[in-house]
Length: 104
Length: 104
DNA sequence: CGGGATCCGGCTCGATACTG
DNA sequence: CAGTATCGAGCCGGATCCCG
Figure (tube, each protein chain N blue to C red):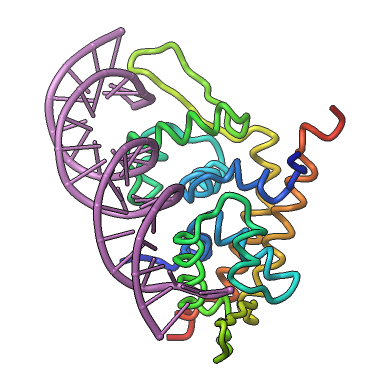
C-alpha cells in the first residue's frame, strides 16, 4: 500500500523546470502565448504548449480564449497556482544566498 | 549578456525529482547506497548512481568510502545540501496543504 | 496569433551482466 | 556491497509545415 507522500505529490506538479519558470512569469501577471515564449529563454513552442496544457489540466493555470481575429489567448495563475509562489520564493532565495558569481 | 537568475540557478541544482528525493532521505541522516536504493521507490541503480555523482560534484552530498571488504560507502548531506532543506520543507507543506486525498 | 501534426535525432532510463 | 559496461526502448524536445 502506498502512503501519501507530500513531497512526491508536489513534485508530480513540478514535472520540469519549465513548469516553474512559466509559473514565475505568470506570477507577475497574465501573459499571452507569444509573450511567454519570449520571456522564457530557450523554450520551444511545442514544449511551451505541452507545459501549458499540463498546467491547465492540473488547475494551476487558467487559459482564457478571446474569440477574436487574430486569436488572443491569455494565461494566468489560478489560486492553486498562486499558492505555489512561496515555493518559488524559497527557491529564489536559495539561489540568491548560494550564488557564487555575485562577487566576481 | 545573461543576467543572473536565482530561480534558474536553483533549478540547475534540482535537475530531476530524484535529486529532491535523495536529499530528503539524506536529511534524516547518512545512508549507504543500498539503503538509498530501497528507500527511494522506483529508482534504478544506474540513475541513483548518476544522481549521486551529480550531487557530489555540486557539493550537495558528501561521499565517504570505507576501505573495507565488503565495500562500504556512506552518503550524507553537506552544509550546502542541508541548506536546501527549507526548500524541501516548503514543497512538503504545499503537498500537505493541497492534498485532495486526505479526507477521502 | 496560437497552436496542432509530423518527422526525427539524441539522450535518458531500465534491464542485465559483470567486477573489485 | 557498490558500483561500471553495454544494449536497446522510449520519451523529450527541436524544426518544420500547416490551419482556423
